[in-house]
Image 1: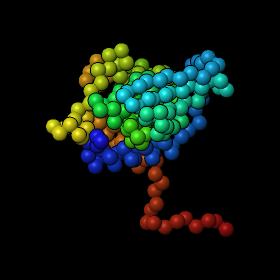
Image 2 (image 1 turned 90 degrees about the vertical axis):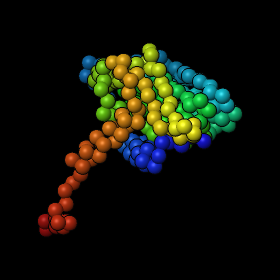
Image 3 (image 1 turned 90 degrees about the horizontal axis):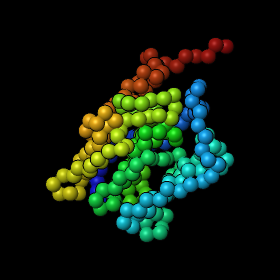
Image 4 (image 1 turned 120 degrees about the horizontal axis):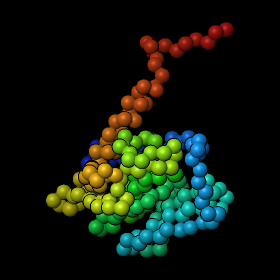
Length: 211
């Protein structure tokens, strides 16, 4: 089983998973930007050895904001199911134990998602929390940050081949970038944002209500 690089990344992944899955906002189409899915449910199925990934887009009830569902099967046994996660491209490690999904779409908001062959969600990074350089950024849908035509995704392992050290991809400007660095920068940005938004408690005393 491939481990995420080290305890730092494991902690980082735990933080992102809890923070970005729990945090949600009411979203509406930006002014002047409209779209409409066909009124149907579609399945995009990809197989990697014994692992089958099924990404469902269900626009029967809502053609603007369809329901997205990711199902992870291993030898026909359902390992996990997640809602509101989607990707444009998905990549698997050589032994099909680590999977990385990437998206240039603001709907449903997934930028990077990492999960394993047992269905464990290791990380989900939403576009609204990233620190990416976007080549195309619209009011809502366009979130182009990597080269989807030529991603050239690469897993990098230590000499033992057991520990994942980094992942690389071509960004939308054709530059080779580290996903670990992108994730780390986004994590640091979110900490700064939280610190700025955190209420200040001077001296640890609570203000008494006015009677």
